[in-house]
Length: 400
Image (cartoon, rainbow, N blue to C red):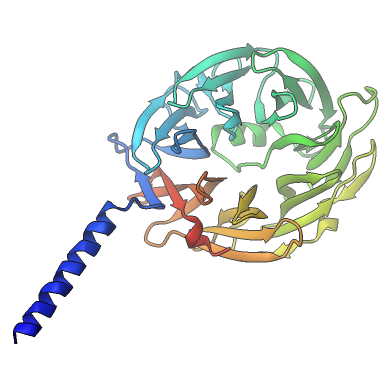
């Protein structure tokens, strides 16, 4: 009997030590839903970037009473997901391009003026404070923005409604224009102005407006050109009369939805067509002036579980010493789905689904410094009010 009592005491001691050890351990992953004090506020998360202290900056759109265009909301959370600061910018600044651009320890956001529709460049500190760096009044309706990492300048796609042009302009972070090129949208029977306004206000379909650098002196934009939403390649140094190369879609019904340059004229991409969605880990695009192809030539893998014309986030990452490309989107069952492919072989490495009790819609993803992934999503409170959600997924949970 004495031996039995001693055994129970030893097991109990070991168990209590184990509990203490587990309580002391810091979790490497989390799910946080940020429910604001003002119940009726509505947020649409746009992008997430990790900061040097292993926390995160989150860029979101916020419904405001002074404009049909959404305001801008910036949140800073620590590495465990706790809020360190949260701030709505002045309602002067609206319709942020959905990209929080990181250049070293500096972060930039491109957005629009509420009244004259010109373009602002905002710098965001690691603590979440935003400062106006530049205002370019002649650049109206900014649609997308990307950092040119070779020179630290910003590439901005914007819309000229008077001349029916899509433009891509390269500017410094203080607003000095170094290059610009215009592309004719055409009139035809497809009026792009209302879809663009609906995109910017958030009251209609969200389009995959994208732009960036392909390789060398070749740049790209995914936007309206020649009556349709197409992926176009160009060089700022081409003669004014030179047409872009294009992988054409059809109107706004068959479009490229994500782009990741892979060197020369190769990209990883995705597309939607009449409600269906396709993942394309490798494709080539035309790069010479005037060359055309159809985006249907890229084929790809049909993913029937994604929602109609699904928004897609596509990022290059290094996990467990392996170069991979990760697609993230929203499923018909209101989960966030991650699809990982080997960057070299283009083979599927694995999938992961996030979200169970609440409905979630994917907003964006980023790799974390500890080798995991942070996923930004929208969820609903009481089925009516949109809220910001963040999944931090540890490397060990991915299994890739």
